[in-house]
Length: 161
Image: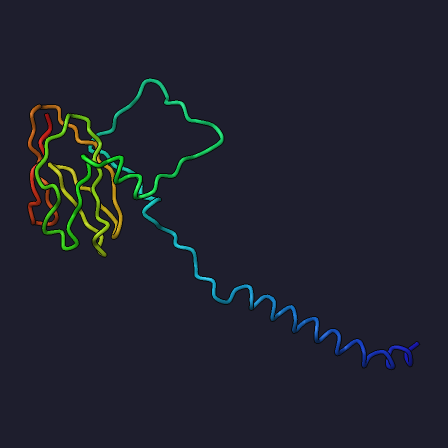
């Protein structure tokens, strides 16, 4: 029996080595060239509002599918309610606008490679680099004029009527 094992050992060792080396190469080739997945993206940024509003009845949600809006879809949807910040945050387009109380607007920071904090009235909103956020303009006293700042630079006035 021992003689049989010794005579077949020269076959078993090379085959085992080939199997082990093949497994290592397969594991390495599956991980080469893969980049780690980002933990944070503009799509994961929550929308913020100056005041929380509570609805008495829950809004129905369609079952089975979720519609993800692209940036191009949002530009169309928020056409007259979008404020585009300059890359250096020294200006905004448009800089002075009037909105009805409770209007949701889009603050667009896609031109800048830096995160920004925009202050509208007494509320501050952080916007990631190359990102955007949504703000609901609300005031208890009407009409209201809310100055809009990026750092110490006044970008304009937002009127609430």
